Length: 102
Image (cartoon, rainbow, N blue to C red; front, top):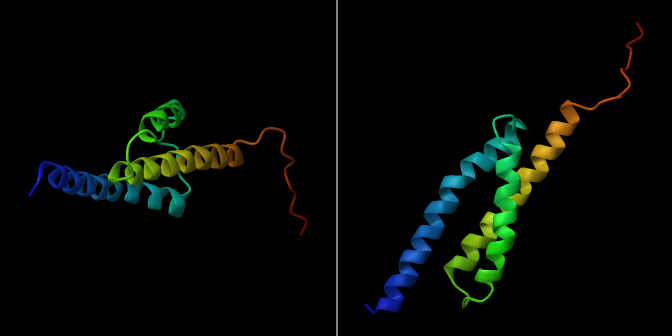
């Protein structure tokens, strides 16, 4: 096995492991819509970091790192959007209260 094939195998395995570790978090967020335990600052920094990291990744040859980075970009963006959406829906200011007439 050459050094390049070992590196490709390691990259593929790490991509699968990292993606598998993040999937339960994403599934739970979808299912419960409870993102109160997530830090908005962390979610914003993760997205900014992913944007900067894109500059590096696009200059690499296609491979497992592209898949892993794509996964991180999508999940980080979704988590931030969901946090904003679910947080806003729970804390809408000035929202009229609907009265139930019986």
